[in-house]
Length: 383
Image 1 (tube, rainbow, N blue to C red):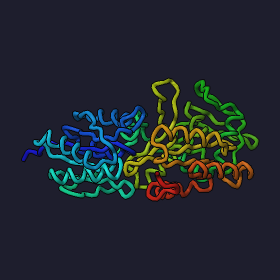
Image 2 (tube, rainbow, N blue to C red):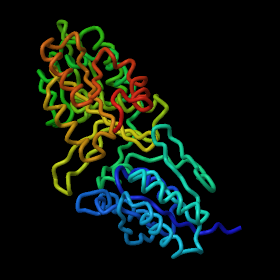
Image 3 (spheres, one colour):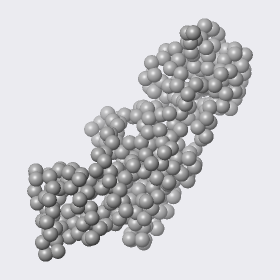
Image 4 (tube, rainbow, N blue to C red):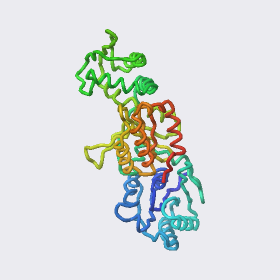
């Protein structure tokens, strides 16, 4: 039996993610927008959502402009567009825009025997108000698909090698020592200017750091280590050694925690997101999607990471990709008890003011549980 071609009616006004979800799920022949006059203004909802809808490949009808509080006008606009294509199976997504627009679209849809859906994004469900429910899960959204809704692009990264992951896990067990290990390598000039295999001489290693040597070898970063007069000489053979100890380990650990959390549809680390086609980029150290919502995290391994400009950077990135709908975390390797007390108190207060959840070094063993909690029941509600 051939499935009847589908048309989708959507309301434009307010948050548009539910409209994208229904369009991506249905891949309809036609998308019919009903938009308030305010939503059609430059820089408002229609201008933001149109590029993402266009990527789906459906025929998009010109938006029918309505007074967002004139129910008769709204009902008539919906009826007109449904009647213009009676041969199609119509689905009305009444989630977005004003309550009056939702009621108008609902009544028009019922009058024309359309399927009527409301997306309850907080609970990852679709409420079927009339007709047939969706088949499958409309809420699955990759990080790349989410970013396209906001006209942003970022190339997915490959999963890290298992050997790198194992080393990252061990460093996360002693994050303050991981910071010191980086500083020891800095002293012997193990920086980004890699010049082929070389000896890093006179490195001071704690017993915990010494336990990392076999893992550094398994990861391909070094192939020899020698102890002389209580110090170590390490033979570097991989150019990413410095990049790894300078912060990549924490991004990989956060990625692994998101994977182990078991509640995310997609999770990426180290994403580079160009800014309006410019050479300059913003990096998303961790980005994960759950129920069509985004969680992002800034990961820092500085000796003194609790600085307000880092919060401002995270906030500025968030504005580009969903604003207050995005869950924001700042993940630091430094433990709070080893931070400057005044700096930590001020930073913590500033983070709360910006609705950013802070995870410090001593909390890293529980990061997967923290991520799962923030995905399901965010500390700061999405508004």
